Image (cartoon, rainbow over all chains, first blue to last red; front, side, top):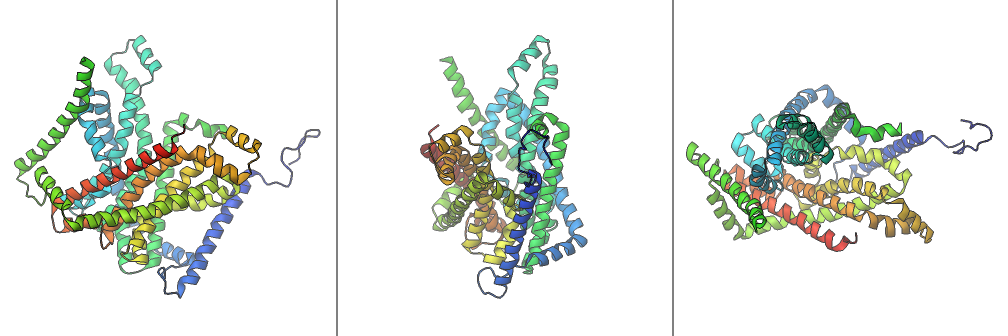
Length: 275
Length: 254
């Protein structure tokens, strides 16, 4: 804590290190939010206003614990299966399509306008049609998630396949690379790097689509659970299911960040500087 | 001359060829599999339905309801989001204390709130307005805080030198410098908010485009479903274009 004699201390000694201060402020903020929630639930408990069904945080926590020990694993497995199949399929298709449309000029000119025309129609607008086409089962949900992910990732894939740095392209020419070598060592890695960013962006789009698809075609999964507790007016259980959705989204994001750091460490060099 | 011809070919002819290809594939599927209209109506049936819908009053009422819910929620969400985001960008203490709450709520995607808004507000417009405001709020908070924090430090120093206090600096310098970033976030937020309205109307509503297409789907009026999807896409693209046009005319001082 003491600076070397002769040099003035940069921070006053009573100041907390910034990281600890951050944690304390964050903890205080979270605590205040919880207190406001608890207070509001007390105030609104007896009222006949619009929001007269707000359980306190403790009740929701208890309900969440109950859900975790109960059906959560089954529901989560069902939702995650839909999500993973749709997400992986969407990313794979978008990568292939992006390479084709990005590198083959004629194909790009023919089909990219169609992709652009489809993009404003979010995959969520496809939900009713998908149910008419594929019914309430797994297929319609996988189709929807795949579509959502595809429409996000293809933009990144086309962009990545076209944006080959000039100096690298000249180096490749200088090294006398043929078409296949160029593709393998220049175009493909650049595209995959962009696809990785796109698949991160598409995580939340895909997860949101899973939620809506399961809410509408409620046969299995977290969304179906959410609808069934909603229909029995069980507000604590509804909020517990929302917590489960939030935690799953958070965990997916964290897992993806970890994989991304593994695959492309240079993307995180700024984080390394801060150490 | 040749380059003009090539541009026309690339920008007009080939896209038209693509559209033609999709339409003929669509027709070919119908012919090959003898699909009934409740599974896949022909493109002409969809076009005819669209024209027919535009002539009815009920259609415009649905569009109006959805747009009303969206606009009100969007404005509330943007105003609150920019205000809280600016506070977070300006004050380190506030940023640190609000971050855990914002970050944890951000992961509960707006769609997961739909059942709760129905329990709280029924099938009224209020529930959708709250939902849109929620969806837009978090997009705006995060990107406003980032845009404000990334304002060129020289600008802040100039402001301080001119004798501005902290809040004058925030209002007159930081918010204006961050405006282009905030405007592009506002466009992304509009897309999310618009689709949140549609999703909320699927599950519990008394009017709106989302209800229109789920009702059409349950009565197997597939042509109406596809026509409704096209309208949803057009309105979304229109809103996005409007915001881009607005931000270009009002914020173009770069």
